[in-house]
Image (cartoon, rainbow, N blue to C red; front, side):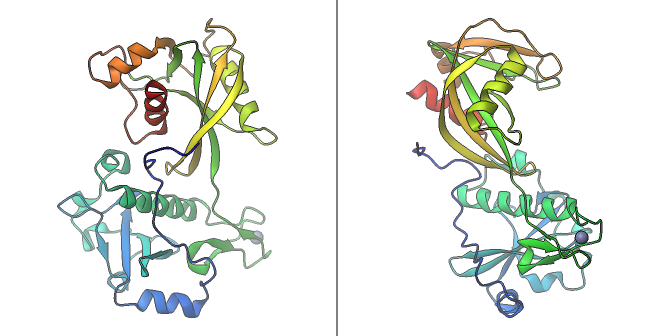
Length: 296
Ligand SMILES: [Zn+2]
């Protein structure tokens, strides 16, 4: 199904321009007077005083100490070239306090800015953590504006990876099962979730993760909607499924608690009329899944 709202971190307006990334194209984009560059420090984007994303012209980065591979080309936004770069000494470009944790600002950014910042963060994180060829260990080189890395030694090509995760509303009649991980903020409960393993379908991963975490078999897995999640680069696939029992056997390494809540109880929490649990933040797919469920 297509959600009737813009999923946080999705809905980006960038044209990735995958077919125009030769050195000549990139030179024209980076020297375009209108070009814009988002600046990150340790995964945090720089913001203006009004809370919007701060852009500078890529030429302002010349001579700066930049994180490998320097500015990456994200794409065209209304035909304006948009880049992103990680800086080592942010105070040269913006006040240090203007760099903000993305989770902290996610609820305040405009949807298209959040999508842009999320893509930029995931791409920069990938370059930062995948500098060396996974095949032979040689330092690799970014190519085509940063959409891939090439190994000069063994000629292997490496592409940004996205990690698939299932996140599920486990249902029993008008009840949903929510859990809390060790060390989560007081009272916080959310949907169960887990990484998909090689060789698994979405349905199989949902069943395996649910059984591992709470000892409950599920069936009738139905896909709802998904979310790109830039911490660092997951694709969250939201589903709902039916529990075969309500008896919870907790895997205490994964979860500190798991509890069934009725739809009325969840509605009351979302209406801020109950503190039965602390709901997941609005910019998470868990929040959007629960909102979809209580409104359906
Ligand atoms: Zn190699």
